[in-house]
Image (tube, rainbow, N blue to C red; front, side, top):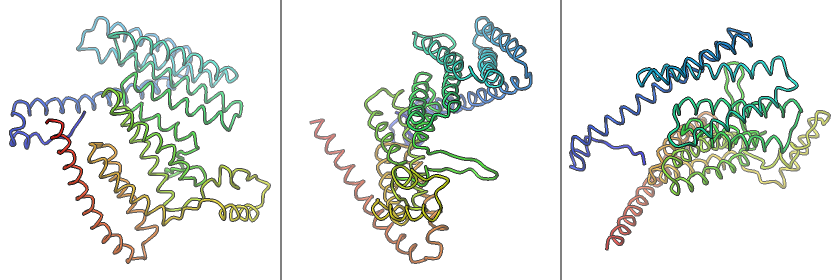
Length: 406
């Protein structure tokens, strides 16, 4: 388990020696430096690959240059030694990226009728072959092989999406596609042991219920399907619970991926809660209410009448209810995450606590100073109660530990 520790204090307390403290600090420094180097390397490879594909703008030129770069990278990896391995990795991945990415661009641009099938099948073959190589004991060039696996998976998923769009398929198949993509991305993240990839699985998972983002000039918008925050939160809560249940029951490698996916699902759930706190929610309006059968030929007054009638029998959650429930949930999660050493969830809960306070300040209670008085005074006994609960939990833990020793 990764944990935050004050090495100076641990040395002063006699828990560890100065030599051990220096070892911990050196390893932490090395991990951070390598993270920065690998991030820079990956961004450089992606930028160079995309730039070369569109700069050359010729299928033959891209194929020839990609093949030469891949061959040069393989030669450097085989003969260059450890000192020049980074250049070999970069050349091999730029070459592979040009071949795979260039093929996808060429198919979509000039062979639309077969592009979807070709990308789906070719991407699957590349992914499965790279996965087979990765699963072998001590595979050579693991970084290159894992990156090619991700390229193949991107091509495969893009091909499937292209097919669905080309045939104008909607409804359940689209949701199943997003769930399949989420599972495939999470699996690829685990196999390559890159938690950023695992975290990206939450994007197609969220889109299974049409939750997503939209960009337009000077704005970047998060949306839940037609103001359905409650029904968007439920699958996210299920994913969070599944990941947290799984983490302590598997090895640390898998647990790290489960925890990061839980954090991203928590972020999406909180964005949905933000919508609920600002707009409220008529649960089910777009799935089995008027929103599910609204058409262009229906007049707006008729639609509003149908909405009002549906709201009389549906579960309606007001903005105020959402605001209070969200605040209580965040406070409880902060305490729970602190006890369980779930730093990701702890930091995310604090962040969204600040966002919640900011949003309510300007959107809901800007002209209601009494609301701040009530909220502020209520926070004091809440903090005291959490403090007392913390003492009780610590005492119970120590009693259990003492009983186990005896």
